[in-house]
Image (cartoon, rainbow, N blue to C red; front, top):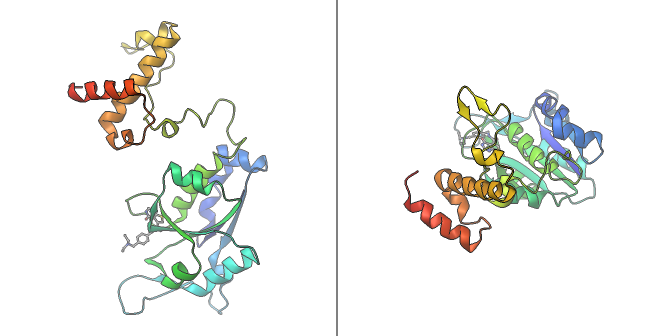
Length: 243
Ligand code: 9D3
């Protein structure tokens, strides 16, 4: 996979991409991440990337010329997806991450200021993504989130101890509670069943904990979760109980 990132703040990317899973994926040659400064694609003397909005109003708008120049330089004759990170985009989730992971190559544009010139959206961008309903200072952190979610899905990106299969968002439920040593910490005990060695009982307990937690915290997830008829009955019963 090859990911091109256009930004005004290229330094922001050095830390996160030099650590952990993304670093390992880069080192293994599973992904190439290329960062470009939008300012390098200006052609005026003062390297201006933004300007005030036509019609008035606060803030600055990213000019179209440097963004078109950068995208055209990167893609040449190829047709690449051009994804704008913007608060107005479709909400990013695990399904979106799976969809995007099918692209072999893509360009991410990090917006900043009040937004980008609408002609960029209309004639350059093929997809717009938001990572959630809160206001960030720019698209950079959002781009890092997207890259992380994509890269960890690439075959070979995860170590043997990490697994894609068991991820909570793969089952559609929140994760069950985890414990490690010591068995007793400040008088708080690890649940008996986890010490029992009864693997069937442990699996049952974990599934029930996942269900309880999901009902309580994220009932919206249950609609799409892969559940057996028995589990649906358990949920009905739990919904009537007090927790
Ligand atoms: C004044 C109106 N603001 C919209 C709520 C303008 C505005 C705020 C923040 C314009 C850009 C930004 C910077 N944010 C992003 O570029 C961004 C973002 C976000 O703020 N939240 C969630 N996902 C994303 S993806 C890019």
